[in-house]
Amino acid sequence: RGFNFAKQLARSRSFPTSSSASRHHFRSGPTTTTSFNRAASTCFIGSDGATKEGTGSTSTALFSSAPPAKKSTIASSSADNTDDEIEQTARNSLTITGSLPPPVNFGGLFYLDTSSLTSNHAHRVLFILGGPGAGKGTQSERIVDTYKCVHLSVGDLLRAGAEKADYPHAALVKETLVQGNIVPVELSLGLLRIAMDEKAEEDDSEYGSRIFLVDGFPRNYDNVQGWMQHMPSYTAVLGALVYNCPMEVLEKRIMSRAETSGRSDDNLDSARRRFDTFRKQTEPVVRALERVEDLQAEENSEGSQLHIVNIDATGTVEDVWKDTEAALDSYVRNDVLTANSNLLKSIEEGDIESFTDLCDGKLEVDPVYEGPTKSSISNAHVDIQNGTKAVVSYDRKIKEDLSVRETREWMHGPKGWKCVSVSREDLS
Image (cartoon, rainbow, N blue to C red; front, side, top):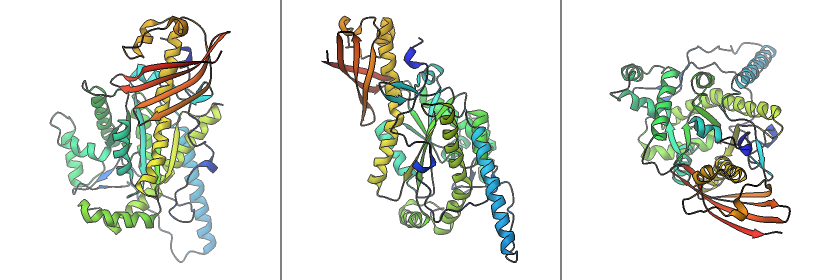
């Protein structure tokens, strides 16, 4: 339909800026740079069903008898290698946002126009990352309940796929899990895509164009490489929520959870190994994703398509939820402003069909305010309410002698966001 307002995408100013100074940092102790070996896995699932981390390479030992100067040289070299791999991974992942073009302005607000995702049937994706016990599951449950997102765990999908009669690789996945071996990344991502397709095609879904929360992925560089090989044609990664929490807090949470969870990996030794794996393998991935955001912002004066939100997970569930909610509001705002911009464009072009598609059936065209005309927008404001309702208000100059403060109420429904009411205050 060729909306002028929908030619480019933009980000909301409520996102953290892409400068490193504005980001939260992992708080597992004093800042250090640690060398790590690249893991050749999507995830490593033992026969007991517990998701673990696995690598396909051996570590290099540093002998305690080595002179201090030599240790310093090796550490410096390792840090350089790590930074180089982060940079290379970031540059190879610039298209992780799929078909999303750069940001655009609506009345002073910058947002990501998601029109191309809807027309291409591409899935909106948020990565959910954090160490063991950081609260990813708890926050994901609240996100799903409030914003009607879809929560997907790669580990859960693998276990379910192994028991699926109509899945052609079920036997291979099952055998791999039983033996505790590494599951090929293409199989993991294949199951993830199937799950997203099935959810998106549900006829009885109350909500369309939902965001998929991909929990615990990507865990390492190979996960990122696999995603870039198999997923950009079908998805657009909007960003990631990264829950940061120091080891001492995670230990207390995991031991408390172990009293009722029944999970075999809810013990201190396992938690420390998992946290160490997260620190060595996943934190560099987060840094690479942040670097993608920086590189995109360098190319686009209005900002990046990808937005990584670091959240301090040391507080109470409610404290963490406030930050999570603010982040989700910012992602959801993209779809709301896209719909509002497209609606105004349909008005300007006299496109009644498009106007009707974006409105509740009870709304009628008002020829005074909604006839074919070119209007200018300023002083825009968006309020996301309870995840599935939004109010967009802005000053709209329709003619030289006609200006109004226009307020539109939007609801998230089976076909995405629909305008359900409009009111105007004369500013002429």
